[in-house]
Image (cartoon, rainbow, N blue to C red; front, side, top):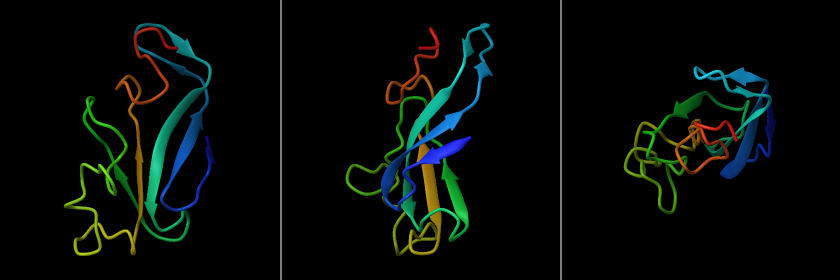
Length: 102
């Protein structure tokens, strides 16, 4: 697995090696798009935020759906943590159509 663009508050892409889905479709390389909020990677504890299938990786900032939880006045403080979120495959915001594997 490898990261691209690991600056704080920026989009990133996580590339995983080959994955085989339950329907037998094999995806040679799975790329997940997401965001890193708060501290840069490897500098603070990491909080992984997952979303519903209809959601997306925009968990804080403009149009963030967790703005009330992820801010300087709450326990999920981006000044203290690295907050990682990514688009779940098949949700319509990422790169992968879960049915076709493309």
